[in-house]
Each structure stands twice: as structure tokens, then as C-alpha cells.
Image 1 (tube, helix red, strand yellow):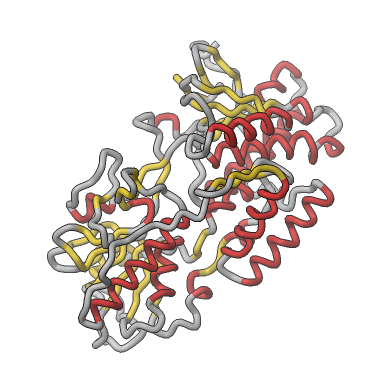
Image 2: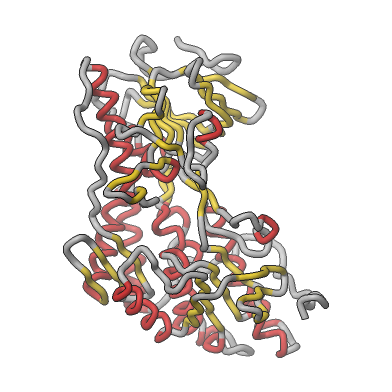
Length: 444
């Protein structure tokens, strides 16, 4: 059996076969592994968690629409019938492309060295605060299930704290929810929180009126949803305003602290600020010592390989490749298509030939949803908004969930929520109270 350097014995397929190591169990990594199921290789898929997360629906966990288990699937279960794939739950800390080794940590096993013949890095992105790291503790971002459940608890605790608070002058800050960043995540979350406050919680509280909650979406650019046409973005803004979201555009957030935010010179008091403004790629570029763009994405060749290392591929959010004069966007479809393409390149090389064409992303359109029964869809040949776009959004998202049981659960929950306006997972799971301290003197 092949062994990891200084580590436990590897288990899995015949070690004489070429070894493909895939780092990341997201859309790109899972797609690559599945595409290699019939190829004579042994696959090791490494991820620091044991589950594949359907990130487009992560905000629905944060806003109490869905439970964590409805949008996450164990990686081992997804690949259970794929005999050439081994799953390892470890944290990758580096790559030696010269020696063709990946270094990872797991509990008391440090710096395990996993040799590879081919490497696919599908390591995704993480939250970026644009150099303002001190804002992180006041304005959590949304990238993991842990982030989502923490935000859900924070939102629900705010209403609970307001219900218990005797000093009514503290209610506005407790019941003000601020989202920094007007991309799809900010739009979808702010719309969902507005519906939670204005449609779901009203009959359940006695001392406060959840209808009086403020939901504020702040975008530094001239408009929200810059990746969509101005026409559709305008429809979304009008929809947000109809369901009770205050939209602020063209003003940068200047400060975030325990008292709220300062935007455009104005202080807005809030105990719940959520960061939805931006992401940055994983440190894969540093691991490889490869050329990167200004935000750290690895500049890959047309076949998604790293220049000088044709056996190393980077796909998804961590890869930089221009198509039609523009960088490929950080979308799930880009990662999925990239993972499948990298697998096809490897399969072709093992047959003794090159694939013959570079990676080309097929844009199937962008979607964003704003609350109950309203979404927008934009593709090269169609623009759609309203209920029909919402149906398309729902069907597509259900289809791409990794496991059949999750599709059934999400479909049932959405149907129930649509008919009753009830959220599906309003449980507070973490101990600890919301910070009710008075604003700093400086903030005042």
C-alpha cells in the first residue's frame, strides 16, 4: 500500500495507478472527482470538513428558511459508490510542486505529505474585508455552515433581546439589521430577513412589534447587483423597498464597531451587522509560488493548468482566466465546468493525447431571488423577473443539490413556507447573550 510521508497508511484503489489529489470538496472538487469515476486513476479528495456545502442556499440557513442538514451532504456519501475515490478530512497547508506533494494537518498528525501525479486545487474563496480586518468581529461574513448558524442565532437573539428589554430606547438598535454589500448574497439575505420580521414573527411577540424592524442594505457602488443589467437591478431594488428593505447606494461604510456602522458620515446604530461585500481567493497562489492577479487568484493557462506545472490545475474561485476579455466570474457553474474540464484533460493525457481545446465557460445565466415568489434571471438571450423567474430559480437549485433526500426535504420545506409564510428552522443553538452594552462615547 502507498503511504503518506510520516502519516497513516493510505487506503483505497491500486497504488500502481496514477494518483490524482483533489483539494476542496466544493462544486469544483466534487465535479472533478465524479468526472474521473471511470478513468484508471486513484483519487484522494481532501477537505477540512466532512461535507459538501451547497453555498447558493447558505443564506437560507442564516435567515432561518432551511436547516443546515438540508443544504449539506457528507462527501463520503456523495462518492460512496465511486471505488477509485478516497476521502480525507484534513486541512491543506501547502504544496511543493517541484516534489509533487501536498502538505496537510489532521489533529496530532502535522505536515503529512501526500504525493500526487496530478493535482486539482478547487479551494474556493474566503471573506475579504478589504484590509479592515478589525471589522470581522463586528460584522461576520457568510462562507460556512458555522457562519450561517451563528448569523441565524444572532438575528433571532436580537428579537428575543428586544422582547426582554425594558428600556424601549434600546429597541431600535436591537431591531436594526444592516447588510454591507449589494451583491446577490446581500440582496437575498436582506430580503429574507425583511420577510422574517414583517411576515413571520409578528403574531409571536407580545412586547415588541417585529414589523418595526429596520433592514438596511448598503452598497458602495452606484447600484446593487452590478453583475446584472441595470433594468433587472432596478426591479430588484423596487422589490426590496416594497418588502421593507432600505437600500443605500453610492456610499461607503467608513466604520463598523459594536454600536453599528458609519456610512456617508451618518451613524446607524445596530447590534446586527452582516458582511456581504466581498471575497478573496484561498492561498493556493502562495502555496504554488505562482503568478496571481491583484486579489490573489492564480493565473492559469487556457487548460486551467499552472504555467510551468502542467500536472497542477486550479479551478473555480481561485483561478484567474479571461474569456471574451473579462475574468471568469466566481460562480458555482464556473467551478463545476472547470472541475469537469480538468478531469477531461487528465483522462486525455492518460490516453496519450491532449484534449485539443482550452476551457470555455458556457454561461447558463445568472439568478438572484428576493423573498417569496420573486427572482430575476439573466442570460445571453433572456431577461426574466417575478414569479416565473422564481420558479426557475427553485427548480435549478433543487436539481443541483447533491443528494436526492436533500432535494425532497428542500422542496417540501419551500412548499410549506410558501403556503404558510413560516420559516423552517428558527432555533437558537448557541449559548451566550447579545451585546446590550451602551454605545461607546466615541460612537455617540
